[in-house]
Amino acid sequence: MADLSFLALLLLLPPALLFVVLYVIVRPRPVKIPIKNRHVFITGGSSGIGLALAHQAAIEGARVSILARSIDKLEEAKNYIQLSTGIDVSIFAADVRDYGAVSKAVEEAGPVDVLIVNQGVFVPEELEKQGLDEVKFMVDVNLIGSFNMIKAALPEMKKGEDRGPRSIALMSSQAGQVGIYGYTAYSASKFGLRGLAEALQQEVISHDIHVSLVFPPDTDTPGFAEETKRRPPLTGIIAESSGAMKAEDVAKRALDGIKSASFIVPCNFEGLLLSIATAGLSPQRSFVMAFFEVVAAGLVRLIALCFQWNWYTSIQKWQAQNKRT
Ligand SMILES: NC(=O)c1ccc[n+]([C@@H]2O[C@H](COP(=O)([O-])OP(=O)(O)OC[C@H]3O[C@@H](n4cnc5c(N)ncnc54)[C@H](OP(=O)(O)O)[C@@H]3O)[C@@H](O)[C@H]2O)c1
Image 1 (cartoon, rainbow, N blue to C red):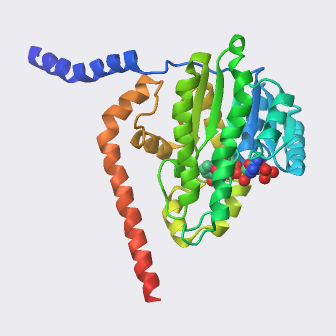
Image 2: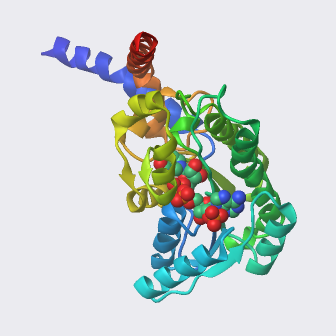
Image 3: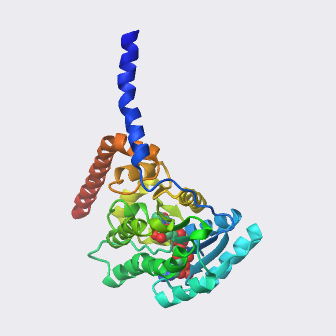
């Protein structure tokens, strides 16, 4: 009996010690970002995930501003939120590629507490076939547009220390965690957001500003419907496995992640595994998640290698078949 207790102690001691160590070292420390009565500014808020986020934030009592290019789509989004919740949102027509226009919009909207940089364009095609104009378009809207938004909002956000913790959230994609056939330009623009977010978090932490990076899977939105029409067949074969989530579900996961100031915000179980597999040197506030990242690293790497095996086998098979026909 004494031997068994000793054995149990020996088995439990390493994970318990690991828990304690992780509890002490995880940085930045956990923090909550309130949404109620705060100014939430969402780019790309007139459609898809951004519209669902605006709707959800309005229901949770935030003062919501949305920005996009088309004034008609913005008006439609405003009316939809007004009709379904009775809440008025502010709209700003601007292109995120135009720094002057977004600065003016942010100035008019007033100091931002939660900035959700969600706008994005995705045109899948093999790099060899894709025009450089389309490559530049995706990098400009997805990456440079995000820099423009953050640069425009940050000075006033930094001054808001008396308003409590603030947040900057960036909408990446699972294609920003792993490169997928046909997404060379899109993946590059979304991987870029990760570098931006990791470095920015270190620069703004002393101002009580917390960065979140959201990684949605395929999501049923107007943008996604357009994207699937242009997907190369192999992109469809590789990316199809996960199925599409509803925009409302992605928005809920994203907002929950932002409220708990998680640096990495996955949107489903597959996304959680992907986050563990790609945790690398990213910040982690939760010692429980850090525990899983440390313990599951080897197994998750094995699963990742199985995915790569499956993808490369599909590519090989497809290319062999298409050479014959
Ligand atoms: N849907 C998916 O499967 C999926 C998966 C992973 C990640 N994501 C990411 O999630 C975000 C939202 O995607 P979604 O599917 O909801 O897209 P969506 O339905 O196409 O909506 C895109 C929004 O961005 C705005 N926008 C586009 N270009 C803009 C620009 N230059 N300046 C300002 N606003 C601009 C659009 O309005 P205007 O056209 O009027 O400007 C619209 O409000 C994107 O960053 C996307 O990369 C989507």
